[in-house]
Amino acid sequence: MKKLIITLALALSTIPAVAGGPDSRQVLSLTEPQRGHVLEEMRALLSGVQNILAALSKDDMAAVAQHAHPLGMGMGHKAEDHLKGVLPREFMLLGMSVHQDFDKIAADAESLKNPKHTLGQLSSTMYKCVACHDAYQIRTTVQPMRKNGAAGHHEH
Image (cartoon, rainbow, N blue to C red; front, side, top):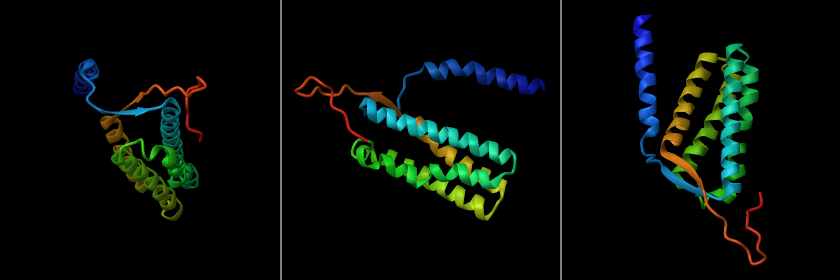
């Protein structure tokens, strides 16, 4: 127990040093609607992961599949058109690979019905999420004004 407390104390004492350092992640400059779309998708993925974990805690593999399906490639293609030329290719490939993972999680949950297998898949997918958040940060760009004085935006 003492070892655990010392480890936690050391870990917590390093957080301000890490958080206060310079942010060296690549900046993704997006318009406010683009930023909103990316963040909405990330929140949906996070919420979906939470729902999958809750279903796994009950060994409810049908619910795992139900929560994983909407996070698959169908979700990924919604952003492709208006963000494809804006976001780096690596970012898009990583995102598409996450969506493919969720399709595989859903399919395996239905066919294998093995919670430990799904946990392993989810863990691998979460590494991709962490890698993305370690590599990129989003900044909002000011949209150019149109001749009529309104800010331009992309319709979804």
